[in-house]
Each structure stands twice: as structure tokens, then as C-alpha cells.
Image (tube, helix red, strand yellow):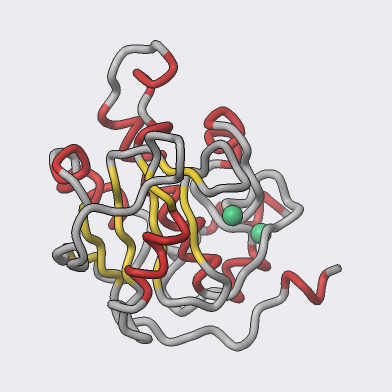
Length: 199
Ligand SMILES: [Zn+2]
Ligand SMILES: [Zn+2]
């Protein structure tokens, strides 16, 4: 089992490209970039979303088909700079009622939906800071997959699987030491002396 979660030698990434897919993602994008930059050493650069018209919907649902969108984004991404497209619209895939984000192990790109990261989705007051923090976490989680990292059994690791926003909040914003060591250089922000407290 451990072999499955051990990535190959880390890729070299020079930056992370991020693109808002729609107006509701664009409206919160600067805050999101600022928050993400606090958690990675790689430069985060805003790019235009890949062309191709409105994203395809999951049949019978008002959701973007995340896998079809990912295919489109992946074909526009460079090997040395993964591209993350962030959408305000909700994501689904035919097999799952929803997904927060999607990436292919060892791919070039990721797609992330803000819809279910917003407190107001659950009837709570808006909280732009919480939204930015959750989005940064989801982006880094998906980038871990892009880097070849599978889900981690450590529940306090950002690479652990979360099926709800509560579970995602609990896993926090840090990679465990094993995952961090397997990620492309600079993706995980170097930990301070406090890391020893986790031993
Ligand atoms: Zn995952
Ligand atoms: Zn881990």
C-alpha cells in the first residue's frame, strides 16, 4: 500500500498558473492568490482560462463536468508550470454527486470549484477569508495529485481524502513530512522548527 502513495522523483515546477473560469471566481481571485502564496514558495501567476466556450455540464444536472473540463485545461498546461482553473460553478462527474476538485495523478493541471467551499452553500454567513483558505487548501491538495501523490492515510495531512467541507477543514493546510518530501521543490512551504512537534 505504501508503494502506491510514494511518488517518483519530484518534478521541477517553476510556478503555478491559476485562471478563474467565471465571474464569481474572478471576483475573489486576488484574495485567493494572496492566500495561496502564503502556503507555497512557488510563484502564483494569474493566467487567462483556456478557450473553448462554456464548460460541458453533467447530463441532467446543473454542474460542470469536472473531468471534461480537466481534459481541456490539461491540454493547455505546460509541464513545468501546472495550471489550475478555479470555477464558481459546482462540479460533478457522472459517478459522484459532486467533487471539490479534480486532477490526474502525474498530470499537468487541476480544476477546483468554489461552490461547496462557500459557507453560504451550507446556509452560513459569507466569509471571504474562510473561502480563500479552503480554496488554497483544495488547490494544494489537487496539485499534490498532479505531482503524482495519491491520498495519504495521515488524517492531518493535506493529501488525506475529504468527502465533506468539515473533513477538509479538519485536515488543515499542511502536508505531512512524507508527502512534503515527495512533492516538487517549493510546492510545500518549508516548515519552521515547530515541525519537530509532530514526531
Ligand atoms: Zn484527492
Ligand atoms: Zn501525507
